[in-house]
Amino acid sequence: MLFLCEKMDSIDVKDKKILFYLLQNSRQSLQSLGKNVGMSKELVSYRIRRLCEKHIITNFSIIINFLSLGYCVISSYYKYINIDPAMKEAICEFFLKSKHTFSVSLIDGRYDLQVDSFCGDLHEYQFYLDDIRLQYHPHLTLEHSMIPIKSELLHYAFLVNEHINNMKPLQWPMICQPVEIDTIDFHILATLSQDARTPTKTIADALHITPSTVRQRIRRLVQQKVILRYTINVDWLTLGYRWYHLLLHLNEYRKKHQIIRHMRTHPHLIRIYDLLIPDVDIHLALLLRDMRELRGIIEELTTQFPHVINDYRFYSTFQILKHNCMVPKILKMKTPLISSSEW
Image (cartoon, rainbow, N blue to C red; front, side):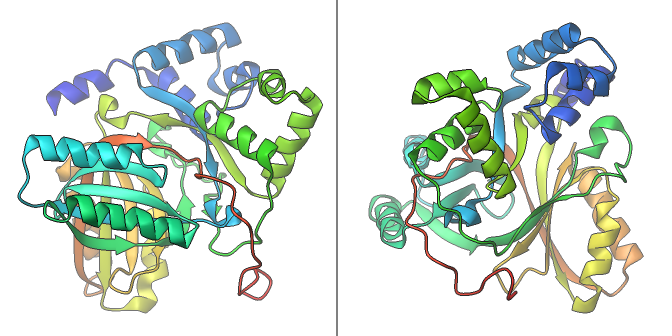
């Protein structure tokens, strides 16, 4: 852990501010970013380039609302059994190559592997599950699955050492109107998911359309809440941080929203998930330096809310092998059983 902390010291306050503002909008101009950070656009450009060279910024990307395109994400937690290094590598390679996987991570705690998969076409998804069972059933046991149906994305306030009270969390809606997209929209989304700073003209040239058409398409995708945010992916381990997931079981369920309101003020809280699963009442995702910080949060919660939390469990991510926000293909959309206006 000392080694990680030394890496953290290799970036300064200005770098952290750059990361903070790119996480909120990675497609903003260098001039706008420089104004937010307090430096020239030339110096901002140099610092961004250096953060990329250090592999702190792994890529510029977007947050896509999968639900609006007819997808959900299923998070599956696996435990290795009868395993050896070669089989571990084969299993990871299978998930890394699969078009269905959104994220693949090695984790500590009750499980060994977390795989987040897109579920859209149910027949294709069933074939994907069958492949997993046929090839790796003797070496991989599915311990737990859950479906995030709504989430709240907070603002990485720890990077700027303050609470961002004037910034509303980004809401990832549970139910939304389906959005029809075509191959042009799909290509635009795929391009921005790999590099959110790709110039409009570059996208237009690849699609043989005008830059103004691309700008109109992107604007519409934002208005329709298909694109929720332009952001960056960060290798947090190089900065001395790990993802910790804290899952709470409550004695008094009516206190759930009090706990969430309390935790929203914590600068290291990054995600709040609502899950389609009966045995978890609150799922919090935090970026922390070590277990001591997590233990401190648990102690503080049980002190602040005595007799409310019945039990808790946690796990941490120590290596993210894949993170790809782009959906596999365009689905034929259907009207949802419950519309957002009826909800």
